[in-house]
Length: 231
Length: 242
Image (tube, rainbow over all chains, first blue to last red; front, side):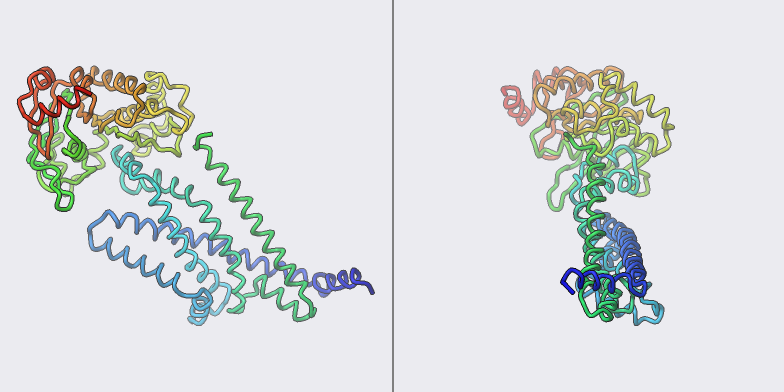
């Protein structure tokens, strides 16, 4: 049996035999589900946390100061501890006996901390004159934020944001730690049956495809948002 | 129309406004001149509370707007402001820049606002720019858009904060022409500017500020023709020579 025939046979064993391709699909589904939901949670938390910090910087009331301190504590703790430890802690809280839910919540909370910092830098990149122009037209603080500041901030942060979500997608590969059957876990399981690394290569390839898709999406969004730029 | 009583503003330990008492009457074209750091812009920005006064009162349409509990957003809808750096919204088309505030504050419907915006653009000869973005415009065009954006709110008074200071020299004229036109229609205006010729021509009163106070004011003819205050004399000799 030559090398090519052996490779085909191994590939067959890694994908077709015992309908193993269905396992990859299941893993892929879980990986995408975790990454996508966590990404949405991350954006939601990030918007709130960065907005609170941004607004609090101009306020003197104690309530705002306390809210900003709480937000800072959140980013400090989340960015200062490993994601795996965070996941294990969540998983061992009794509410999250299902690893999938624990990982969605865990990655969402984790991503929120990074996204909030990205948004914060985006907000600070917007000229103060934009806010003043909005307010001087009689728009309230929140309308000014929503209609004028945030859209520009998000546009400025798009590259960093995609960077974060690409990292998030790949980070979900540690979800196997808390018994989630994600792509990595599934592929490693199959490897244990086939005694070769082909399932891992396949998993790597699938991750690569997902990331390439995200990069393409990023390009499209940047192009669309660039309409207002000169040139 | 606007009554300012003993207005003070400190930035930290720096007293920028040291007690200004002044009345802007209906139809006034008040021009504020003075050396940089004299507090002219701060005074102007206090009038619509972009700077929060440290002390004093500002009465507008029968209310002290510097008092706690005054809804400043409603007040600002009636006071237009034009900035040195235009501050157009770069992510919106010109038309959207003009219609954003009246529509989202529900003062005008989308159709009304657009009609008004188009007629304003027509008036300044920029109708063809309605659907382009601010980045495609020259500085003079941007500032004229910023002026009509403020006018679209039908303000009672217009505040101009050095409207021509960041323009290339050849674009100053078109912006001043528009301000002059608006002035002729009877708009009440407070203008901070370094354009002495323009001040002389458009203002009905000129105020000279120095170190946080209005130290002299008069009609333009008298203020420029026979300045009394020593600082004003030296200021004028510097700027008019240039």
